[in-house]
Amino acid sequence: MSAKSTTVGALPGPVRLVPLPGLPEVEPGMDLAALIRDAAQRAEIELASRIVVIAQKVVSKAEGRLVRLADVTPRDEAREIAAAHGRDPRQVELVLRESRRIVRRGHNVLITETRHGFVCANAGVDLSNAPGEDVAVLLPEDPDASARRLHEALSTPAGPTPVVISDTFGRPWREGLVDVALGSAGLSPIRDDRGSRDRAGRELLVTQPATADQLAAAAGLLMWKSAGLPVVVVEGFAFEGDGTVREKLLRDPATDLFR
Amino acid sequence: MSAKSTTVGALPGPVRLVPLPGLPEVEPGMDLAALIRDAAQRAEIELASRIVVIAQKVVSKAEGRLVRLADVTPRDEAREIAAAHGRDPRQVELVLRESRRIVRRGHNVLITETRHGFVCANAGVDLSNAPGEDVAVLLPEDPDASARRLHEALSTPAGPTPVVISDTFGRPWREGLVDVALGSAGLSPIRDDRGSRDRAGRELLVTQPATADQLAAAAGLLMWKSAGLPVVVVEGFAFEGDGTVREKLLRDPATDLFR
Image (cartoon, rainbow over all chains, first blue to last red; front, side, top):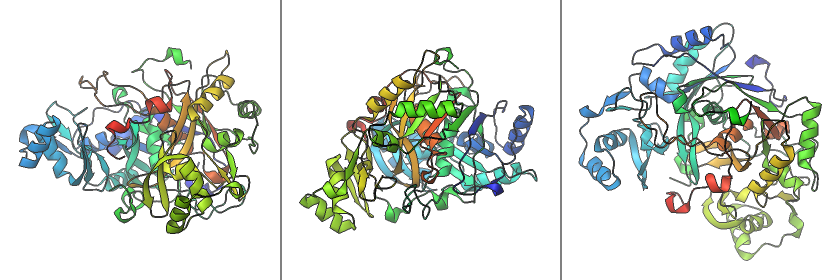
């Protein structure tokens, strides 16, 4: 399926979510696009005109976004927060460094707004699946730029390969984690259905599916951490357009009721 | 694939999202399970051991959850809110009837906590895709019970058919809509990975993917309102357990930082 053949309103066909096996443990400096291309070739999984959803963790590792906790000196505020919530002050220090501001504290969780503008627990700073017990993994510096580099490296004359970089976030009001898009390239992260009509002919005013988040959540069905499958190839989805998560999916604080 | 053959930790295979064509316009009193079964048979789509994700709107219509706006007399509070935000006072009245309380007002949106416990815009009261311009569609009385009835009616000796009822919700901090689960039956709406270990052998403490929400979001890729495809069949996903959205996915207000 070519992206160019897509018309909005055409009936969608089946979509396949294919986990990519055989990716090695990713280390700083590795060429992640080459690793994905090789793994796909070995598994005979086509990438042209397919979307690749990649878990943030492997992108961060490839980009060297790792910090040894032994090298972190917590500021007073980090010590105070850590003491109040039973946390490691060095991890809290990293959370503060990665954040513009604290949104909520409590229930042993620290919700912050990251430098990128994501609102999430611990600014995405994670200890699980890090290479050593004392190493923290930070979010990529610019996940949209990371997605763009991977998109360009994976696309071929046979067809473009849009990339979505995903992470698992908690949500207000609901239990459990769902994957959302941190970065995107090669597709529009939001589908603008405004101006189209429902089946009764009325104009749809607010139907804007967050495509990149839907893709991240769908891929998340196959990305349990214990399975170690951080890349999912999405076949058959009629992507279109282009755009970044930062510009298209992060809500303007001025129109946000929950800052 | 049988749910019984599933073991947590087994590597997942591809998942297919298959839109169900040929569903007629649903009207109150129709047997939705029979309509889905017949449409699947005509399209030669297997339902046994597959998950069926159904858009809330058709469930509500089949259950007769329709209100003619002409029959609604707004209370003073509804008139006041409607005037302040440029809304139809009769729709605001319905939102108030469906809600326990208002969570936020502003930006031409009314965020409430519904009688079920969902926090969403307009208590899910919707005018689009309703049978007439002056008819509002309300959420099902008990979406978990709706899912349970459909699950029981669709399951056969050949295999169970878990059901997720989905709706598109906005989110704090992010633009666009993503589908979430309003009700579930025949699968656990959340996967409890706590106690399993990451690839370095460390225990995973907080990884609880909200499976039913991931399924809803994935199905949402194929449910643009203009396409009129409110049912998606999910093949190849290793579901397990059982449980309701109300019990498993709605967060206890006592541990919620955003009420």
